[in-house]
Every structure is written in structure tokens, then in C-alpha cells.
Length: 251
Image (cartoon, rainbow, N blue to C red; front, side, top):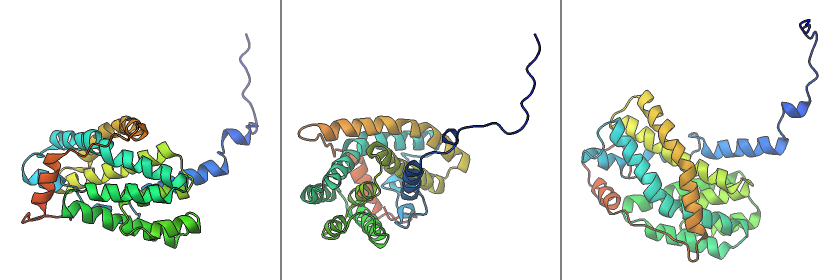
């Protein structure tokens, strides 16, 4: 059998095989912008109790850092902050501004220490300011966000995701990935760990983000929502960090 002769000249490939729809690309770029470490909200300055866990020798190497971060993701964030984010996203999406205000206040009240309250206040205020300066969302939405006495980070982030017409599951995953990346960077600086060790942790823990999103969706979808804020060790460590003698981070 004679071998097929090589094709000469350009291959006629449909453009759709190479180019995504413009709206898909725009949504992807908006999601990347919202997830970028360059987003000026100051996340790099917080460790959420991780620095105190290192001080108390609960985290001392790569394995213990990975175990701590995984535990926080699956049994703290996925049980409260992530479901709250979903409830806020749903409220913003349906223009239920009273509902958004209610869940924003609920989350703020659930922060057990001064540092954790200050963290969500500062990052939420910064992100809300950015959304306003970039005119994300309708004027009514921005007005509702601006009317909040205190803007928490989940409220501001869910607002931005809704305003940018992002898919809910993707935006929540991005929110969790940003948290995960900040935790790993804090561990790299404070344990300390090398960059490669940080990437090994990221490579393993990111595989749990999907399960965390699913857990959050189930909890947010229950009637009433199943929100679990019980994390006594984290609260104690956060309180200890407020008077810790030597520290790099603000929480």
C-alpha cells in the first residue's frame, strides 16, 4: 500500500477549533484578574493564624504545613466562609440587597478575634473600593455595596464575581485558590519552606478545592443553611497572635 503523501501548503482548519468565543475569553480574563496576586487588597500581609501555629510548633515542616492548610480548607473554610460566599453571591445575583447585608453582617459577627475582623474589613473595603473605581456592576449594586456599614471580604468578592458575570462555581474556586496561595506564601516565608516545597503543597491541596466547593454548596443549599463556625484552636491561635512578640503578618 502506498504511503500517503505529505500535505503541502496550509491546512484549512476552522477558526472555531482555535479561537474561543470572545465572551468566554473575557470571563476567563476577569476571573484571572480577580484571582491575581496583583489585586491591591493586601492579602499578602495576613496569615489567618498560621504564623501563630508556627510559633507554637504546630507547623514545623512541609508535611505539617500541608496538613494544617488542608484542615483549614476542608473543615473551617468549607464549613462557613465558602457557604457564606455562595449565599452572598446568590443575594447579589437576585438583587436581594437586604439578604446580602444580612449575610455580610453574619459573617463579620462570626470572626472571633480582633485580627480576623480587621483582616476581612480591610480586604473587603479595599476590594469594594476597587470595584467602585472600575465601575463593576450596576449603579444600584454599587450603591447597595457602599451602604454596608462594614464590607467583609466574602461580600465584596461575591459582589465582584456577580458584577463580572462569572460562573458561581468557578468564582468560588478562585476565591478558595487565592486563600490557599496566600497560606502557602505565608508558610514559605515563616516556617520557612523553599519555593519548590510550596509548589508541592499547592499541587496536593488544590486537588481538594473542588470538594470544598461541593461541601459549601450543600451547606448553603440546606434550609436553613448549615453553617459551622466551631474552630477553637484557630480562634485561640489568632488571639495569641495579637500579642505575639515577633511576627511578620497582621493576623
